[in-house]
Length: 126
Image (tube, rainbow, N blue to C red; front, side, top):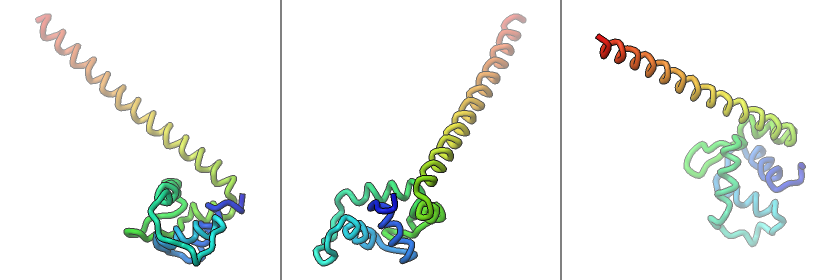
């Protein structure tokens, strides 16, 4: 798993501390096996991968077009397989928290509605 393009690029980012979008694209270009002399700056599909790395919290966007590695990114470099397992567990916990909060809000609304209905019934009976 350590010879993937993603691993090679993130290890380069870790060495450089902060890098620009152009640097990330150069790292990807070299990791794909192309010669750096033939590199041309393109928008292409790079933004999709970079965004997924930001969403996975491997790299962080510091400023416009400037990125740095995060603690999660360092964990990814140490052990990529366990990194994905840990991320899936964290995502499941976030989803469970969100769902329980939504249920709690729904439950509160239903209780409030029941109380309002009881009050209306009491008023109409009088």
